[in-house]
Length: 610
Image 1 (cartoon, rainbow, N blue to C red):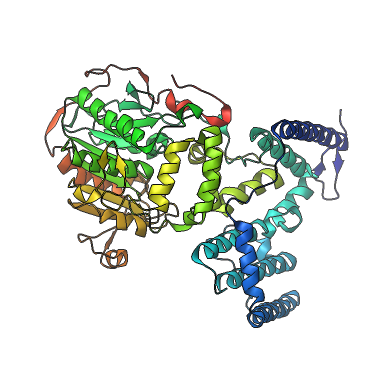
Image 2: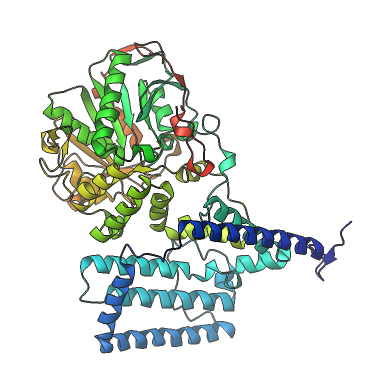
């Protein structure tokens, strides 16, 4: 029986022998993993780190500009020293018990890093916090106010300076985080050993690269506690599976609904749980709902292009829905990149005089890429060239690369908070369905993704009449007359709403634009029962997004109910038919939803697609 030690306060400390054993096991694992990593690098051929994005060049240019204006640099240093002197005065007053002097620097209300009471109550931790905030604020100011940098260089130094500042937050280090200090004392250091074990686990999962675990991947199973809306796969080809959901009402609208999700993520963001599932909600409203489940491509798909996603993707899905339902008019909805594809499909069909799409809905969809937000820092010629080189070497863009890029846009929330929890606190990640979906990465075919980046983001050719050609058709969005409903999110950092608004002005048919609250995910996955965020509507579509918002009316609750009123008119109004059951139509059921394609999960090395 192990002996236990107790502190003077009576707390039980861990057995030293057990600590030594745990440490030895962790050290052994670290040694083994390092040996495997070195062996792999030796076999692959060791190469120096590359700087595809030109980050070093950008910061060298920044340094040159700063040194060229020593007066301005001196002024910045003097301002920093002045704030430090103010901090010393504040800290001295606080140490003496005075509360009359206000703090020099306070975190933003949205900053969750300093929520622990010790950051305010403790003289030491308050001093550390304010020192960090003062330094980071001045560093940001120096970088952002440097003159003479071109736009691309300025974006890079601004973005990566913020990444550097976020990484050096005192919350990310054991000795300067009061929560970690308390846990270390309370557990006798077991949190750090467990955290190191978690670090090794995540590095092993990333084959030598750190992939921070955000949630417990074993806590969820597709079809069991996520993606649970019942249905059947009724069609599949090499690009996608088509799911038809079971009816939830005895009668349904005459015109069916086809949903086109992005292939950059998996479709079940629209079917996480019953209470926030968009597809479940649409079936409850009486829609015959279909959704596309894209293949998670490997190197065999390297030559697949954007037009393959159109011709063998959306067009085949439209054909299949028509076969199943017998309807020549269908309603469509789409999310993010899926919306970019859907609008391209509408323009293609318009040129072909194909009028089967009765209405189209676009969630956070960019069509005009002139203002892509912070993603633009990754979208210059040199960066794309480097990315293309890596993609064409293996035939695809690895899903982890794309996930890492998006996580950097919100590094404190999506990287550092989990690093602190997993590696410093030694805790396991909380089971969270949204983060499970977020970590369920998908690959991008090399040819398709290169076309997408160059023609849409870099060249912004989709908005130009005939700017791109797909399936022998010059795409012209202005010729799209289909009624469209656009919904975006006011805090979206992936598809900024002002950019999506510019795209909503391109089609020439009836258009309604709705602005939801929150961000790229929460602003869309916002069921009426939650009664959150609200949304803005405006009967007019002025040329300026600012004018749209100035004249808009804010409404409580979810935009889902507004969309349902809009789409009802395009779904046949009050005209209903007996509910359609999957497999009863011209196409028979292949397997139960959510199907095999979506179960191809990269971090578990499962290949479940047929």
